[in-house]
Image 1 (tube, rainbow, N blue to C red):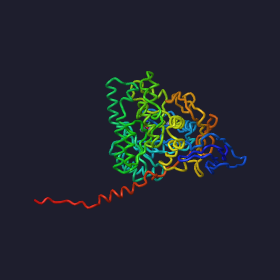
Image 2 (image 1 turned 90 degrees about the vertical axis):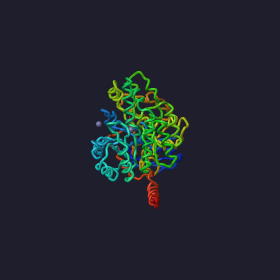
Image 3 (image 1 turned 30 degrees about the horizontal axis):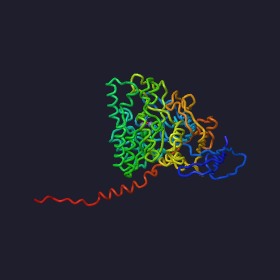
Image 4 (image 1 turned 120 degrees about the horizontal axis):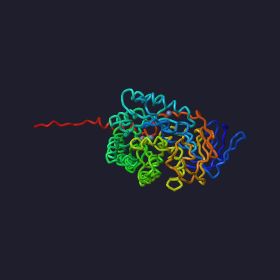
Length: 488
Ligand code: URP
Ligand code: ZN
Ligand code: ZN
Ligand code: ZN
């Protein structure tokens, strides 16, 4: 493979501007971006005339090789990343799950799983219990292990769920470390009660999943997490925003000046709940994820919110289980492993649904699929930009070409695809990962072990001004309080 690469004549797009220019790459790094770069004949040249040259997608939310609900996701770090590269995503951030509550053991396990990586990746860490050891381990994660975000599950009662007291302890610790707190926002106790109600009514099919955890449970938990993060004065990132209810809480908080980030995922943006009525169990069960994929008006409102900047970036929550695994819940929807695919489809679906439809600009596309993620997790401009000095993670997208999604042709190991049959405009024709052309002419050239772990530093831009606000608050408390003694 060549270590020198010239991408000629394309429209180079960054989050805030675009220009016709050449991009010259050497040893995995972008060396120059300007018109008419002249090179020798030892350089591989790719013609991008009439096409968009953009930073590779960064997926902020994936679960590869994840043991969950008695199954393990069907994509591991190799197959999931290969699928990502075929769809124009060149980096993802996966969730490390602690082992018996130990963050270090959890990380060790994920370091093993991710050895076969063929693209760059980073980690978030889930917090599933609280004690002095966890607190100390959070410090190690941030200060030594390159992890700057922690996810708290407000749902999955009896498994990953934590209570408000733990949430507050976790928020406090995140704040002191400059790490970003993330929440899965659903009221887990209420969802548990909702499930019991469905079973009592004899509703055991996949529709019971959607009916047991309606939007109000997501809205309530989102509001609660936002208010508690506000009480602690620490930034908050809400993962997989799936409803109008949750989105409106985020909108309200942002208008009041609170630092809240909202992440819709591609399934929630483009799909709807028609699956609930499918008489075939597997066809319905493949859509089961939490929070559930809602009625169409929710997806439409999330798209509008994304276009207006109320929501900031798009993830996938790629967490695929195959038909056999989904069939574990054939008699009881509570046993259907929760999760859908998306890592390969995100770039195409966001282009088709948001850009091709005229809802966002091409520069906004780069912002919501790549740059904003890099900024939030403090890896910008190494990632998320086409400019000299940045990593050569680049895609060439042809707006006049079309794509089609099918389990028959996708690169995930799953035998189903929730976007089956989707046809759209705009195709990722070339993917460059670390300066190597890995996707060209519908062919993947990937090697296990070629992907690098990307360390992420604390105190991203979201923490700007937090200390000042605290100082102001503290000084206001120190003002003398006059008390008067009753004199009768
Ligand atoms: O159903 C889902 N979302 N599965 C993945 C785990 C999570 O909650 O993100
Ligand atoms: Zn495994
Ligand atoms: Zn979640
Ligand atoms: Zn997830």
